[in-house]
Image 1 (cartoon, helix red, strand yellow):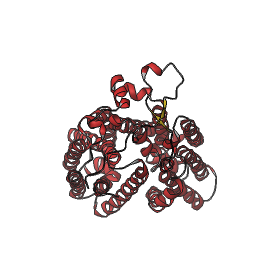
Image 2 (cartoon, rainbow, N blue to C red; image 1 turned 180 degrees about the horizontal axis):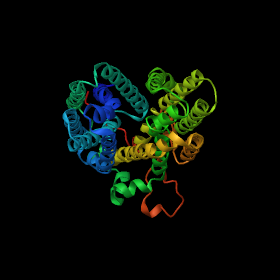
Image 3 (cartoon, rainbow, N blue to C red; image 1 turned 90 degrees about the horizontal axis):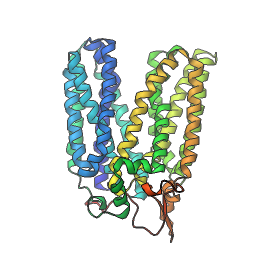
Image 4 (cartoon, rainbow, N blue to C red; image 1 turned 45 degrees about the vertical axis):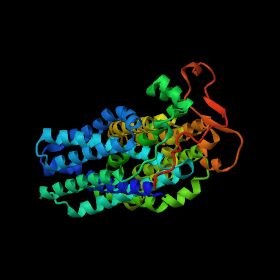
Length: 451
């Protein structure tokens, strides 16, 4: 890993560490510590999510025009201000405004960081770069939550203020750290290649929507996040406490098991999947998650002992963690490899928007179902998980061999297939959009780094 990648990963991990300090306690802080009520706490959480939906449609174009570094610096500064303001918010308007600023800042940071990883990696190293980022972010979130839990005291609002100030400081550290990175200048900011010219001619959104493989990946991404992350703290938690009789404290153990599996399994899984087809790995995740939901069904509907129900519920979160470890080296690098050079930021932002939509819709759908419709809830998400498998296999037919299995790029070949966004003129023809020939370097491969 080069110096630029190391600094990006360090900043990313520290910002996740800061988020871990406050995310698990945000509801308690607003509702109980500041005594603003459960309704206000729900509004604050909703505003946090809606702010992300508001800014992400504009983030990608800003990244592609200005570069990811200045966008990330501005976003980290915005997030720092929002976190500090939330730590001192004692009224409803102050809490809502601070949550909006914090949500907008953290939302922009993710596609900016992803684009920086793309610029500082190659097709051969990108899989490991994204796997390392996922590992460090989960480790940072887990450690932040663990340390924060030892510092907070519901009877002392100042203890929560300290947590938010620590979070704000971590965002500042992220901004300062990335400013020391000498970013390579990819061809997309200088020389424009034919693929970029065609993308620009059709407009960013138009070009992205005409890229059928990317559209299918966005649909797949929505289902992935809806069926897993969108249920962690809403539907699945409600189902566990209502149907399985799980103690609220056990939810913390389940989340800890999820994080532990990710941390322990990440690089073992990476060695197993990096030489396999990405879409087959994603399809396997769908099967694992379907089994996880069946295990959850046993926890709540199996009429076993409370001990067995608790063990099954914790195992559900652990199985989700295994699937997450398999996704980290596959999905995010695939977004980068599908993107033309001049649209890497827009592709990352579009995928982040699909993720955020799933995280907004998931609790709204899963929460009420998990609390009252126990059987239909499990059946619904078993089917969604199997849908992941079907969508992944379908996506595999749209990808070139190298996009689906980057390890093939190391094998010398005279003929290479590259998937590009379909031009408007080609939409009426057969839909592959593949160009056969001997093109230059892969679309998102950067120039050599300065370090």
